[in-house]
Length: 164
Image (cartoon, rainbow, N blue to C red; front, side, top):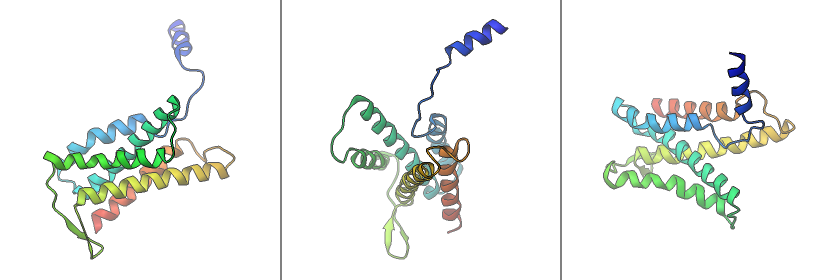
């Protein structure tokens, strides 16, 4: 048994590299979206989590491009915008665009509104996390802070959209 544990320990990487988001959480969110829609969860709430998912995918693409040395002006903004804009493909055959009025004047489909809100909240939360980490000497305040902060913000936004 000790030999198996020693072999397993040798196969573990010596250094951990920071990722923009937890891959297990990303896969879980992406897999849960169709299920939640079938369960009757409002489209605005599903959209919040879909927007965060698309923003995570954009961050992964940015990381991939940085590793390859593909740098150009405005790369991050362009990639994140295109990543979140892929929600438009859902409206081709899957989702019927049916706008609702938000804030008394803004006619937008609930899924689209939630997607934009979720992506913006996720991106802002990532920036806040980076700021908090820099102020703490380059260290997180507690383990998995980078995962916990966006989940809490998105859960609060989901709760607010549910009561509205």
